[in-house]
Image (cartoon, rainbow, N blue to C red; front, side, top):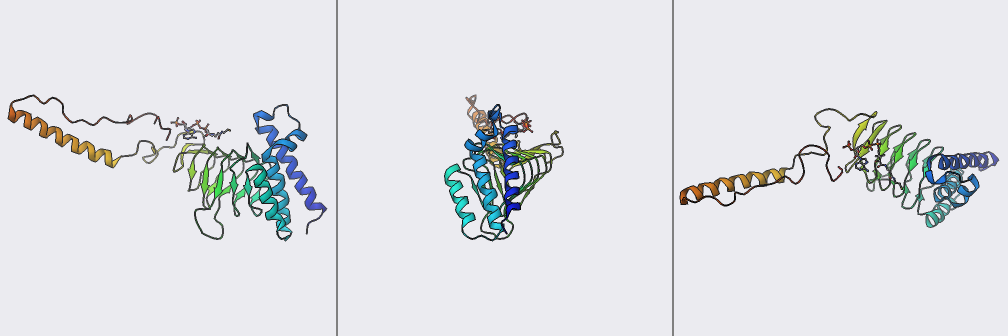
Length: 246
Ligand SMILES: CC(C)(COP(=O)(O)OP(=O)(O)OC[C@H]1O[C@@H](n2cnc3c(N)ncnc32)[C@H](O)[C@@H]1OP(=O)(O)O)[C@@H](O)C(=O)NCCC(=O)NCCS
């Protein structure tokens, strides 16, 4: 049932959300809790979700979804009333954030704009990510399926994550892959996701080599020097940082 205890719990959760915004948003420096409560869209979305979730748990029909829809219209943040959200979530800027029905978010998580915690298709049951405590998810990142993002992980902006993320790691790219675990680069033969073999370029290079040999053979037979031999130049260095960012 929805009682005073539930209202007190929701008020406590919202107080902690406002504190999280003050701690983690550089733009909130010197801004009072009242102003944050009144003007931060991430806080409005969470206030609405905390109420919608409590109503949903109390078995109230229609109202939870209506609250969620109204909040989405106002903030651009869509949170399913059934999503389980821990304490101290901070949603920066907000617009374009989607948190699915079976998503679970731990304590002190930070989400930037455009983050999706979504499903991969039409599966039913648990189909959205579980995000553990102290995780940061960069803007535009898509986390899809019933994966687990371990404690303290960081997901880079625009990353697409479809597999579990180890705790205390940094994951970037599409598909998302760890570039740091416990602050160190991952080691091992499969660690280099940037300089992957390119079979098409290798095939063209092989053909170009054979054409070059033919040009030289024709030049020898005709007694002329070949003007230019076919050559393939690498588009990016085989080692070092990929300018495309991985
Ligand atoms: C991933 C992130 C959290 C940095 O984490 P970190 O652990 O400090 O990692 P680093 O900065 O040391 O970067 C690790 C590697 O990932 C690369 N990288 C970082 N962010 C990346 C991204 N979004 N996409 C692709 N590669 C990225 C870095 O170039 C570096 O590459 P290297 O191993 O070749 O040196 C940060 O880059 C990021 O994307 N933050 C999101 C911020 C955001 O969304 N802001 C919106 C504000 S409105």
